[in-house]
Image (tube, rainbow, N blue to C red; front, side, top):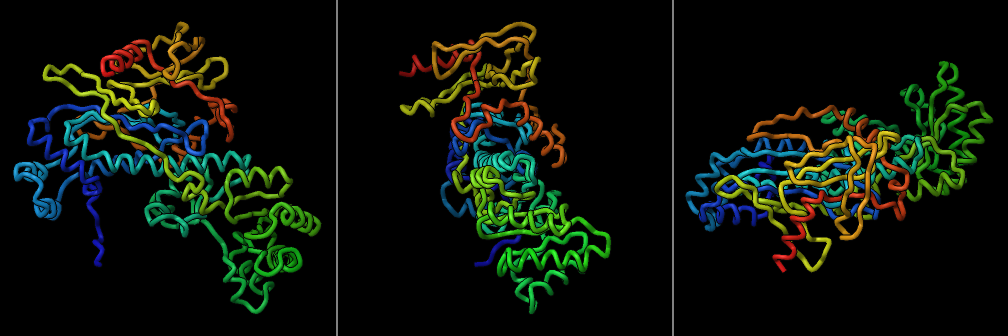
Length: 482
């Protein structure tokens, strides 16, 4: 099958978005203004929070949103869509509003990561791509942040391209991993496209190509004296690999006055081997030589290695990061929250389910994060109706949406509005930060969370609470729809 070089991502939508769009057009609802929320219900790996990512790709998608003549011809061939609807799609573009939390923001279940306000067809047709972008990159950024925190300040490199589930997953996964805190990637194109620092040295094949391991190491040191990280486990890590690396460093690097170098292990008992390798390197005078390890690592294995006294400076993390293997679905959803009536009044909408976790929070909303003035730490998130304001000069009582009897009083705090405007009337009003700035913002914001929220197992539940007004609206709608 011939693959098209360029895909129109406007067609990357669930087919029901097109059938509903045609239905809205034919029933006179195409211009009815709708409000949709993107949110998720559960943190991956039962963690305490997630990391928002993917907004830059959403912006690019919306700016390019259109249907080509070939797309229209395909839709016509399905014999499902009216000629008037197909004519409408010829000049289609996004004319609505969009608000989002900035990439790198720690996020929690049931709060709107993105809010879309747009005519019904437009709001419906963007659903799939918005979810795809948020679900994938937020998942990888969240996993990366867990791995980085487990490493305790040691560098983490993303090594997963060859195990990623497709080219986009590799490229954008490396971007998301960098947002989450990784120091770099093995994926060259992610550096070329997004500026994720790419690096690498050798594989086992390099060592095997030479007659001896020592010859392979010396040749590499001569070629790349300032980037000499030698893979020492091709044959026998402690009996040949590390001794030959030391000899190559002595014979090639030391005469050049170069003291920065490294070794990498990709197999074996990492705790024992790195302790012994560190001892051997130090005794040979290579105290500045860094030890990198890889091989199916994740946050729990990294924690265990460090607990066992492993001497590791850099972690290369591949398949379990790029696929978020332990929980590979983020679970973000796109739900209608309100519509505008003929008079412009906003009419809240709610989805009710026997599964309580699937009941939505209605209305056009915004949310604040409360930070303690004495600690700088995040106290709670506060969902409210769009036209409510927060007076952070006085104490506030907030309501737990999961328990009608439970409240919490917050005091001495500063309230920050978490969503920012991205599109207004179809025009981009947001300046996308540089990737380095997104990464720095992410790490700074994660630092505002209490350690109890950041635990890998049984984290403290962070408050995401409703205003009294929003709580009353939701309760009234639940009662009237029983």
